[in-house]
Amino acid sequence: MSERFSFTLLANDGAARRGRLSTPHGLVETPAFMPVGTQATVKAMLPEHVRETGADVVLGNVYHLMLRPGAERVDRLGGLHRFMNWPHTILTDSGGFQVMSLAALRKLDADGVTFKSHIDGSMHRLTPERSIEIQGLLGSDIQMQLDECVRLPASRDEIARGMRLSLDWAERSRTAFEGFGGPEAGRALFGIVQGGDDLALREESATALSAMPFEGYSIGGLAVGEPQQVMFDVTAATTAFLPTEKPRYLMGVGTPDDLVGSVARGVDMFDCVMPTRAGRHGVAYTRFGKLNLKNARHAEQIAPLDPEGPTEISRSYSRAYLHHLIRAGEMLGATLLTWNNIAYYQALMRRLRTAIEEGRFDDEAAVIREGWVRGDVVSS
Image (cartoon, rainbow, N blue to C red; front, side, top):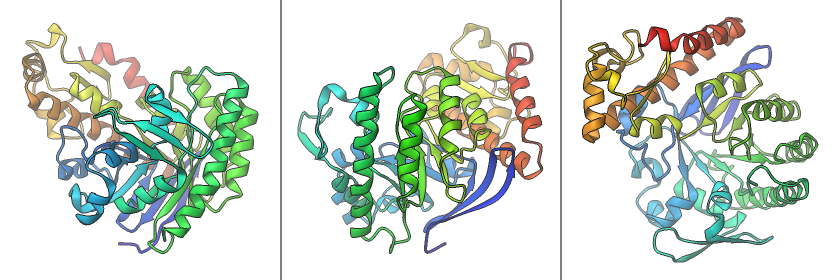
């Protein structure tokens, strides 16, 4: 295991990048998709099975973990890695997304945000300093500054206000990170670019953050309802102003098509609840696109999800059986489909990494998309 965080850029193919993160808990091959373990668990999965899919890193969430079981308790119990039996890399969100998603339960001011717990109504205060303190107590390898994510559409004045508040919080987060010994522990802190769908504000944010000594940079405030092309345009405009020698993380994204398109625009890291949430709701991701196993057309199909899929789940279990499990409300159905979906996302990332190394990213992306286009024919 490495003692300190580092990033090595191994290859380029156009704007697409192949890299490697080194963290105190192992290596992360990029482009990387990080399964979301919001409450110290990737829902419906054992940690060792998540690892078997090829995942190098999972994500935890400050807001949820500070409410339950509490950061101080996790620290007393040996840190988040030991607590959740995941000895590999962990990235933690700062709680900034909840500043947006729980707007009805919070009060925002220049110093921080006060939340009313969605669990029991108790009041909690989150500032940039407290967010970094919590992440240090959890012991995550990659930490995020506290930011304000403004929901789109919004006025330019509102987007600019949120972006500049996030810049102020970035400076405070960095000071706190250094004060709590993050660099000495080998950990990383990422700044978060905000600016909504305004390219000039994105440039201002990215330029200001690039002048700060962050180990990596995140692109926030996207995947919040804007059209995909807007997300792609903002991502491309933002990466143009970020340091090439440091990792770029597009937060909360997304569909397989989002991932391929964003890798093409220079992004290295992704997270999203989509594959796990879809699995719990009866949807499987395959190289032929999505399959809704709730549909009656699967009730007598003996074919597997994909005879050439990345796991025994996709190759061995019939669609009829998976349909039965989902319709019967059996927990095994959610587990098997979640397992399949995470494995599909990891296999997709491996394909993209290999294609970048071999200088054929555009061709591989076209093959992947063609599989989804032909999905209704091939998978029926």
